[in-house]
Length: 258
Ligand SMILES: O=C1O[C@H](COP(=O)(O)O)[C@@H](O)[C@H](O)[C@H]1O
Image (cartoon, rainbow, N blue to C red):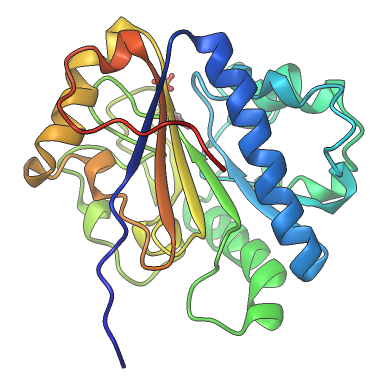
């Protein structure tokens, strides 16, 4: 069997965050159309932090088929769903409360299990298995799209520099109780899940990201968590950033295209 190395990342730098928002919406709708035409559903994973507000270009857009979306969280903080730290709350406030998505299409953590991280992460893994395993019969789920952010320390989802979870090869969902960024208790997609997706998009904007973005793209050998995102062929990784974040980056930029 021919062995393909991962496709190189495509870096697109936009003049400002509003232009990221518009192109990201166009990109997501294109990915949705391709997935829905092929299999009648669109599986997408979202992040918290600065990502949810970058999805505002989807609001009011008639091309979005919300009833076809199956939404998971690439990571989630182990807190009640109405807690200020919840990634689901951020996505709800900034997106889901403003669009007609059926609530059963949004896969949240089971809040009856907040006191038992192992059970909670197993239950979330089962939630993914229900969506993917029978239909795709694959070892790992193949998300149509995973949207990620990059923290100022180079973390992504809840995969932090130097953490033992960076080496996880088996589980789909892992938990941690020692996140260096509060809150400490979280669950996260593992690399095998992220790196089996059809498309992964990092979204990063602002001059606060410039050093870390330069490090992650120009010095991937350092092995920061965001540099370890390398979707297996034929998957494709994209970076949608603004010129403030990419100001010092040497990695070649590409024009935005679908
Ligand atoms: O803690 C988290 O941080 C990352 C990055 O956040 P950002 O505000 O720097 O974009 C985020 O992607 C992740 O979902 C979240 O739990």
